[in-house]
Length: 137
Image (cartoon, rainbow, N blue to C red; front, side, top):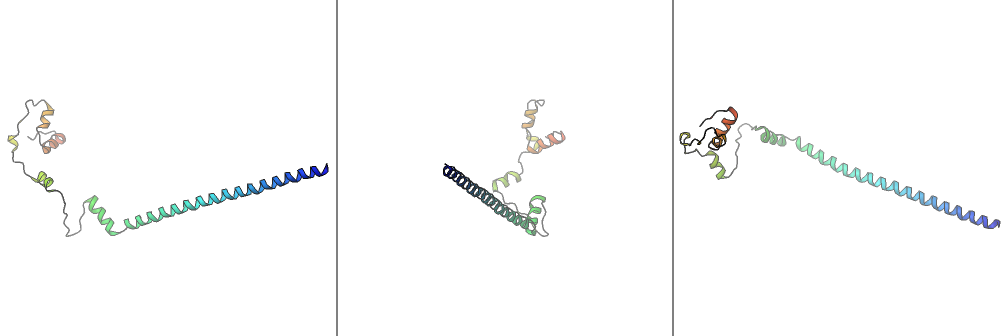
């Protein structure tokens, strides 16, 4: 009977040792996965840091500053001319002098009707009317 108890005790101790080994392996696996995720995050962050450093280096150049000053603040270098490339139709539309004189524009039927008053005005006259409140027809 004593041998049976001893055998059961050995089996229990063996199972406990197996449990401890598996638990240790699982903890090791968790630590390994955690370090791998940290390494991947570090690699991604390093790529982002390198990219932003390249962008900052680009923004420190004279060419970039010159581009920004020209595009946003309308500055030019000495002796430089600005050329706008647009379609010929748009150029003609905005540079063509209107053949009709302001006296030929017909007044609306009812001057009290503001909608018809505004519809009869040119763009310039509308701006003057809305900003200054003057009817320049």
